[in-house]
Length: 179
Image 1 (spheres, rainbow, N blue to C red):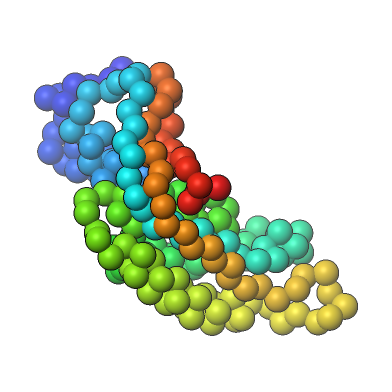
Image 2 (image 1 turned 30 degrees about the vertical axis):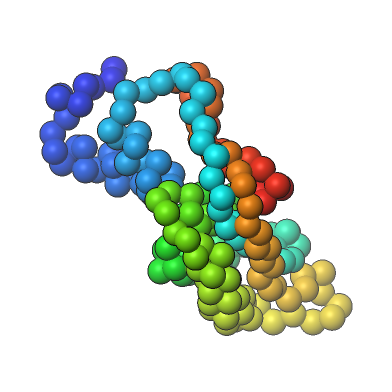
């Protein structure tokens, strides 16, 4: 049963908003909290800067490490990346395993979004090199090679928004910068 907004206490609304904001880009979560569910196609065109980051050799580590080691590494990596992205005005669009997409100028206006993305990329590489180097030692004869952070940066026009029926929506950013 779905409660109407009037049936929720302020504490429940705050908790729901915090949960939505932890799984979705915060600006999207705020818009969802303020609107009625919709099955309409909702897209806008924006010029953004995109940072794609992933841990190189993560797949081979996944075959050799314990689930607890993998979860701890992903947690530490994600915490670092979110902190750095937000400090540079980036919006985390999605996190899937060791892959992360961060956008600038996706919400609000940020004329120097490319510079913010470059600064965040540099800081993320520095912070993650220490994190990834601290993981298990690697020998040449092992199947798991050293971990490193791979980063791609691009700026350009995208369309971003939501699609799908009101009972199961998806949020996407589409265009050359995110391919």
